[in-house]
Image 1 (tube, one colour):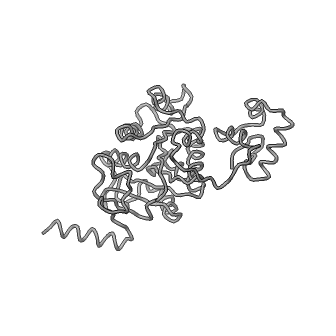
Image 2 (cartoon, rainbow, N blue to C red; image 1 turned 60 degrees about the vertical axis):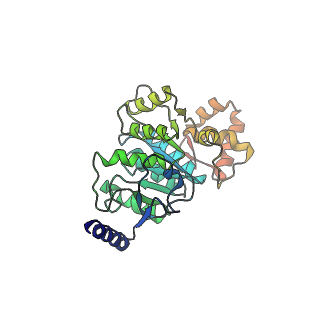
Image 3 (spheres, rainbow, N blue to C red; image 1 turned 180 degrees about the vertical axis):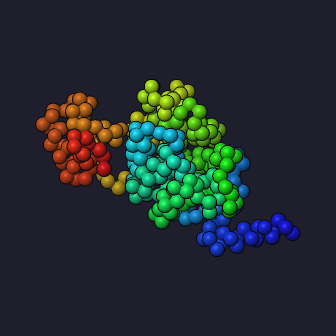
Amino acid sequence: CEEIKRAEEELLKAENLGIEIVPLCSDAYPPLLKEIQQPPIVLYVVGELPKEPCIAVVGSRRCSDYGRRTAFRVAKFLSENGICVVSGLAYGIDSVAHRGALAGEGKTLAVLGSGVDVVHPRGNRELAKRIVEEGGALISEFPLGTSPSKETFPRRNRIVSGLSYAVVVVEAGERSGTNVTVGYALEQGRTVFAVPGNVDSPFSRGTNKLLKEGAVPLISPEDIFEELPFLKRRNRKEIPERFKELYRLLLSEPMTFDRIAELSKMDVTELSALLVEMEMEGIVKRDGSVYTVC
């Protein structure tokens, strides 16, 4: 019959392109995603589905420098600690989250609102290639050749949250599509974190509203492990006890020496010596007067 013929053609095309088709009944199907209402019947996969626990890092396409810095830092931290970062490969926060995960030398998963053979946006094709090359994957529920549309993106968002133990919203305007992901996350019983932003910033109106409605504030990336203690942390860089206070402080954002001194209330001579040690051990780096976690 015609349906069987189409299915056979799809299987042959996927095989020729190196795309794996993972059905809902397969042991390889992500277990968390199986739990959601109406999980995808099949997943089209380029690369390898992660065995690591996943957390989504999402936000608007239009974002501020603060949002980009924060998304990169959060994703890199998660990646360094054995968490696979899930996002949607869109411009803005999504792209930065994928890049942060790659910088942390971990895995990242891009969920597409198109067929996996139609990478969108085109400007992110090189990023998509890197994700696969470095052990991550591109996935979609849509048949090969499917173009992105207003209908496919909301359906994509339920997979982003469905794969993840939690969703971190870095920046979102009041009417951002990210709110769709949050809605799915709440339906699915996922923890929603929101990064506080400037009350005057249009980029943070959505996230600040989420905080008002009960989302978990994300002040430092370490808050994720405190809120979700069942996640096993695998930090490749053990931080000596004497550096931990400064390390936690700098995880929240890059800071000048004066700002670190103000917040830590440490003697400036002692602080200077500790920061020099941390630089020498590759824990922080200094750009002019600004210190950042490596």
